[in-house]
Image (cartoon, rainbow, N blue to C red; front, side, top):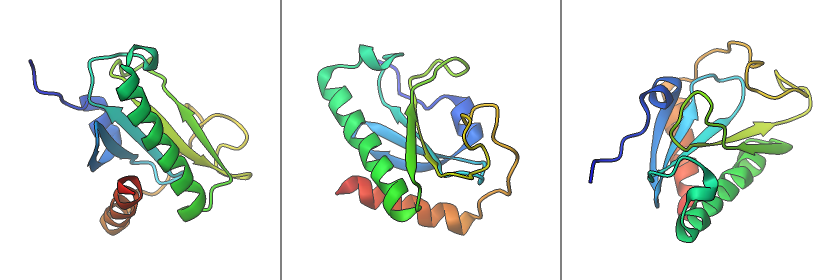
Length: 136
């Protein structure tokens, strides 16, 4: 059995926040939107290939992230998608949205303009808050 590793492209595009359950939690580097990525520790490439237990845990984590976006980051909506066209490793995007955000009403992929990077302090604080929420 080989050691699981988060795909290098995801690590280049994101800050690594930590691990909870069977999933690694990332935060997209673009500070224009609150954009989290959940990477299940699995060899499955699609959501429908997960075992029932894996899928249950992934759903719990993505649901908790969606609640976090609304409660702590004042987002009106959460967009959740597993799109593996560029990175083949299964990963789920959980993106906070609100009317008037930088991409509204379009999708974020290919539409998010460059934004200032998050400070190390902001990344650390978001990581602490998100992981605490996911631990509940």
